[in-house]
Amino acid sequence: MKILIIKTSSMGDIIHTLPAITDAKKALGSVTFDWVVEENFAEIPRWHPAVNKIIPMAWRRWRKNLFSTQTWREWREFYKNCRQTHYDLIIDAQGLLKSACFAYLAKGPRVGADHQSARESIAAFFYQHRYPIAPNQHAIFRIRSLFAQALGYKITTDIPDYGIDRQSLIVKTPSDSPYLVFLHGTTWDTKHWPPSYWRDLALLAHKNNYAIKLPWGNLAERERALHIAADCNTAEVLPRLRLAEIASVLAGAKAIVAVDTGLGHLAAALDIPTISLYGPTHPDLTGALGKSQIHLKTDFACAPCLSKECGYLKRQTSPQSSAIYPPCFTKLTPAFVWETLAPLLAQ
Image (cartoon, rainbow, N blue to C red; front, side, top):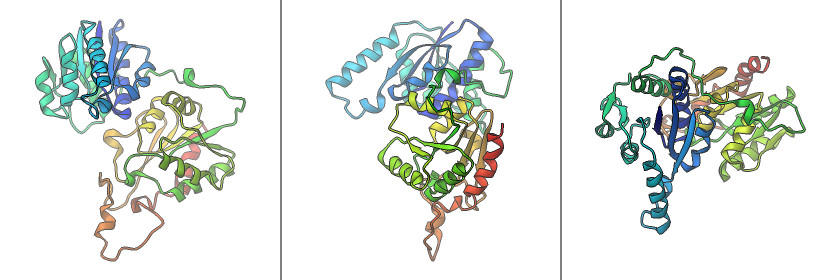
């Protein structure tokens, strides 16, 4: 049985799809998957042994230059790749109008969430078969449910298996000293743990004989990494790395501390002990899910607000400057994080 998956982005969403593939492989045996995915994330599906072919696309880049010769040349190549194979099933695991349109390009029966369950209800019009997905459950279980209904099997375990061989990603280095990785970069300003907290946590790690590796993806994150490492000679600011190289660094870590970020989901997929820090967001529906994953949620009055801007500060009649921003992280201190992390390091 040959299946095409449409799940183009983002990093966390793509990683959330991997356990459904593992479920299907265990239930059906000979099934294989091709996958339509954004070019920047094409490395991730390759890590699952049941994924046969990657069909990369570049919608994020194409839409900025719709009328360029290069865009149309790449689009024709993408269209050709989508039409090469007649699939037994095409699963739109994204549930958006754009992903449903991409599914329409391929050959084979199309399935997805029904009108009430799809992220954009109009997407359901493009499917020949539509399935209800229970709301208010983690994204991983929503996708696993879609695959199970579409392919006719029952999910036998609540523990997601991402199917990635962590050991195959580890690159051996001359130094075998244990290290931690701090995933300090994220999208919203309100999801950032305060830089002063990161520096204090780095010093706690140093006192307990752990080195720290600090990846970054843009100049702002590099500046933050340099700030975190300033007072800690065992903290290393890494060069800018490709996704596969970051995965290798994560795979070799003793443990990870992360904010709410896509790389935190990768840490969970690699089964690395991880402390994830949540302020304005809530982990129950989209948090990093897996073994040895601990979610630390702030108990601040207005959290989780799910907002990119701090409404608490806007509501203050007499705003006061504070070293802790966003203020919802005030009680989620470095000492508390280290106290929670220590038992994971002892395993």
